Image 1 (cartoon, rainbow, N blue to C red):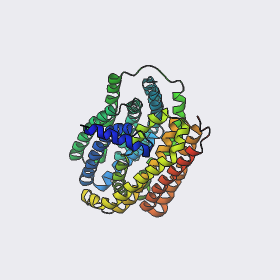
Image 2: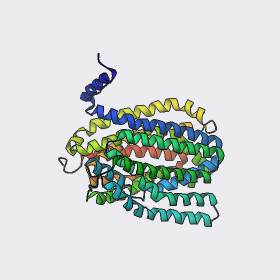
Image 3: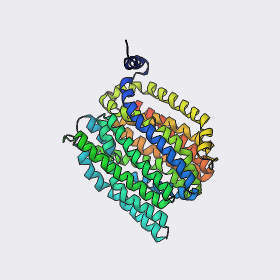
Image 4: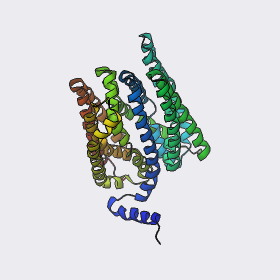
Length: 420
């Protein structure tokens, strides 16, 4: 008698004639990655409810502002190292993991010093909350962004089960501490200290566990770090464009409006994380495939992604009013913002194209996509919020998602040397 497992396997193999994708691999890897996503998303949602009910809007706005500064400073860390580690490990060069840590720690001292200077500025001006918060960011930044390298290593090894279990364990610890912190210390400064302390400790512990559990070989890729620098320079503007929205809201509209904006985008951004595991799982496979093969299927793959993401956005827009009213009764104004913001889901098309270009080190195309396009995104966000407030910013974010997707598709199709 055919078992359920065998029937599922057969169904997935049958579906491949239509999706033109290794559905068994995608389902297996996606299961573990999405298990991590679901646990993290659920706990994150509960924590946001606690923030909305126990912190004042001004305190929550200050908390979000400091985290946004940390996210923006990340743009100046060695962000390209993660993709390089995944690519190198997928090809058997696991020694890049250990070697990358020292390089990242040294590199990350530069943005950490900038954050330290900003903290000094706020303290000099007498703003203890922002001064101490940014000081915590400067101390945690080098460590957190270096030791998180265990994640791209596990992705390159296709160790998705370990990736998920480590992530779930770390989430359980992090959210337990943060829930306790919200109840005991409902203020921005102590919560920022707890947040950055716990996330850094979890990253370091997870890195050590990964070394002991998987025992990476010492084989290195001599070209890996040169490529990582390329990716890092490309990523500066794209990371800045992604993370500057909350800074703009704080400076143009104030901390109370930032609290509302943060809650409006939280659920759509968490739901968009559902697609990230499939992109992570796709990266090692795209590395193994020829670029001409990827280019031949990019249109059909993009249409599939668009159909799924657009439908997801429409569904979210339909059901979100009831959910947001229940979760955040004091923030009724965020419903319409959140509904429209959900259409940023279509950016998954752009991220898929970016992953394909990264997998094959298409440096020229990546510079255009990661440096040129974000410049337009930044200008759109600044202009949008300056002239039309939150609505202008949200429309700019949706337009940016569409622009990224179209640009990535065009660049993959128009890439030089397609037979490489």
